[in-house]
Length: 214
Length: 220
Image 1 (cartoon, one colour):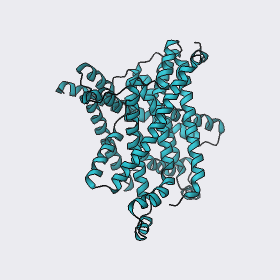
Image 2 (cartoon, one colour; image 1 turned 30 degrees about the horizontal axis):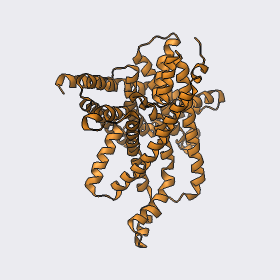
Image 3 (spheres, chains in turn blue, green; image 1 turned 135 degrees about the vertical axis):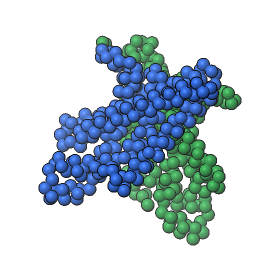
Image 4 (cartoon, chains in turn blue, orange; image 1 turned 180 degrees about the vertical axis):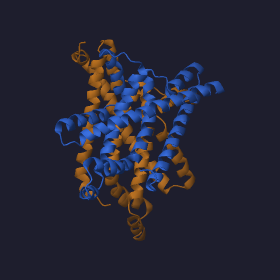
């Protein structure tokens, strides 16, 4: 592979990382809202959140992406395919992250909350000082896992025409007649990115265990 | 806009054939993936160290790369190394190997979760290695790994949709093709989403039923 083509692949890998990071961040925000709705005592909040999670976890991402890509223009929103892809990825990861967060929040020990009540902390203080830090710490491993899943899943946005890593490999494989080389290179780049994310994740987890980050 | 699913439903025989391919590939890949994954996990657990290391590397690569890239490599790169496969066999092979990597990790964790004392006790009463696997490890870990296996089966249903990109005539490929022929793309995708949603929910429900049935066999 010539250096110029390799540079193209690296740039495409950067694009894949950028889109994945954006999707994870947006998905975390939406996931927090969905999680809050799911843990709410009000059924009219809980019910749509449950439906949201069930739908986005029950339908293949490829179908979701095609659906959003074709639905937006009908609704009068002619957005570039990257935006449609980003919306699809974010909504999908939001559903998974909402479930992870719910797991975190429901495993905060009851005794701690009772103690906080006794100590006279307001509900907001309890959330801010006890529930949120503990729940988020418990969710870090799942979040790292989800980041890796989304990095891999972002390859599917190539199908709706976003030129990220997989699509670039596809284009180069077609124009050079060297599919083995370019698909292996793409695979190697995904692998390297995922290893970095996993390594970063375990460093964060260790730092959290030592209590340096709260 | 008009939204009329009946336009798509008019092509019912084609839809059913697509569904049949989806279900067939899913069940076959899941079943073969479980068997192959079990063999890999057993080889990593009992086999010689170099083999274990090599298998670990393969599993890591399969789990660290997107299924789409794997299937492209197999389908478009395969012919360059003498592996020319039609879409359906290529899809089946790709999905099986992909599934096996994940199942092998589930089983590896299952092996590790069986209390060591049980295995040592089995050794002491003179069970052979094969007997230990068949009588101790497999029964004890079945309950432990069942939820993850159901979860993996659900992931595999959804991954079959990816096979549409190499022209496997499964549900996503067939139904979206009908949609574009009839100018009813949204209706087709909506129908597809509902079909997968139903399949996934049914699979999860079946998994919970089996778990409840087998819960009396929980040892560890």
